Image (cartoon, rainbow, N blue to C red; front, top):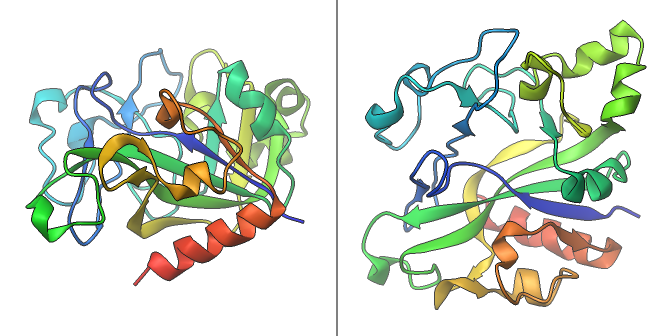
Length: 235
């Protein structure tokens, strides 16, 4: 049966210095982090991105972006890929098998009157923003040994574009993958740092401490429930 993990991605108060917005109706903007490494292939800058919801990127307009994860149809991407160089994430990600879910969550800042969004945390919170239905997951070492035709599946990934390939894991999503139309809160309505039931009741995480920076793991039953909640939240 399918399992799921959820990992934190996207702009934050450290990189590039601001979070993407979420509106009271849960529409949101996925804003990638900056690219901090040299690249062998050209990558876009923030000025090149058509960021939705009139996000102001003027302060970072000339900085290159690390577009990871990439969602087909967004910012010029034509594939669903994700790569990670961190060992703490590589383990659970490389264990994903076809049909599993890789969920992405981001910390987003509420734009608008909190009174109009009583189910959302009033300032910032962690929200599910996308899902890959996993087609393939490979370790960085295994990727190096793939035939060229199979490696091409990941050729648009940001880690593959780096001058020195550094991903410890690469994940490709199938055609059932998606950027969500409406963000789904992981945080409780009281505060962004307070974990909601999708964390405390469904995941293996305690919800204590900085849970929004950790890998969240879901067993088969929890994955089924989580997918249902996400589907119901979409328009």
